[in-house]
Length: 89
Image 1 (spheres, helix red, strand yellow):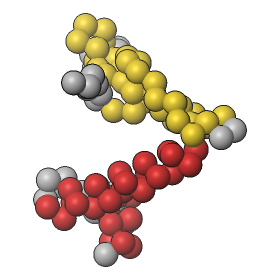
Image 2: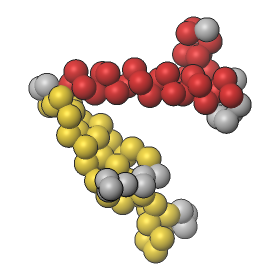
Image 3: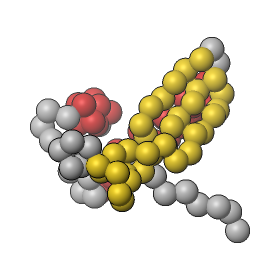
Image 4: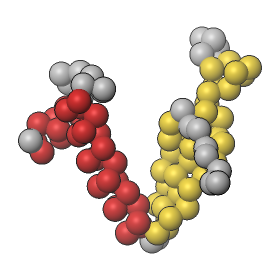
C-alpha cells in the first residue's frame, strides 16, 4: 500500500534551475489569522525536475478540462481556467 497525502492546496511553487519545488499546505484546525480564517500550514514538499513538472502541469490541465466538462467544477465568467478551457475546446 502507498502512503496518501491530503492537501488543501499548493501554497508555493519555486523554480531553481532545472528543479521545481511544490509546497503542499493544509488549513490549520487551531491557528487563525486576524480575520479568524484558518492559517495555511506547510505539510509536504514535492521536488521534481522541470520537465516532469511541465508534464504534470499538462496532465492536470487535461483533468481540469474533464472536471469542467462534467460539471464537477463550476468556473466563473472571469476565471483564467474558463478562458483556457474555452481556448482548448
